[in-house]
Length: 238
Image (cartoon, rainbow, N blue to C red; front, side, top):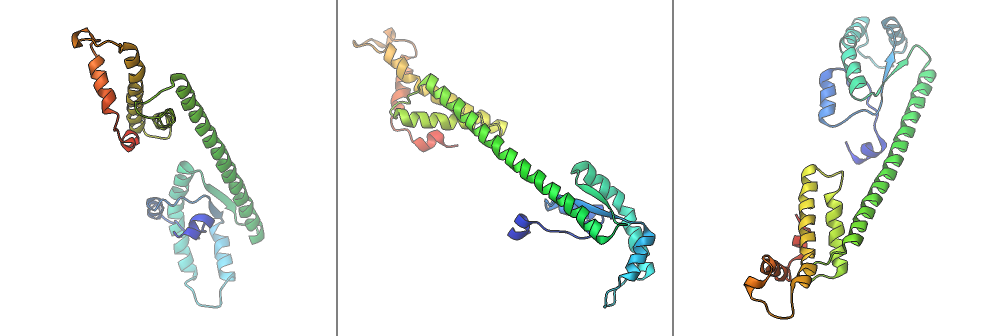
């Protein structure tokens, strides 16, 4: 469908008529917002068809109408049951009334649907804003508590990277794989930030022989200096 159909919508008349046509719509990801079934007995259908003849010839003999009605009856129950079960978007309208009554009934249903969609979109936007705000507050609170400082980076850049990792690690919309991936990155980032206070407390003014140093001191010191020329893009990338 083109952009106009995607935004303004489109009315499909007399389709789908078979389960195969339903499957074709589903394959194209086309799910009707509302389906109106105009319910009328066969006798009245034939009477109206014979009265409402257009000025040009059409295949509308009694025999053809009977065949079309039989085909309709053969498939409609399965189609109705499917849409009622899967999408709850089926609406039966008593078409024995006048066309103006039917028009007003369909219009009333369409207006109700529009209001429901607008309410849903509004609620969803509010929920998204609240979710983002809560996630951001949580991440900023963690920054305030930990006060991280990544080796050779400013406090500001460290805080921004921490926020980025935290938001990705605890994003409920992301897959479990992505959250775990960024949780590992966040943990590693915090470990690197803790190198500064660790080395600050373990390093002495006087030189100590390697055997007299803490067992992991040299290893952490090497990691510290290896981070001097680290690429920021690699820190926050995939």
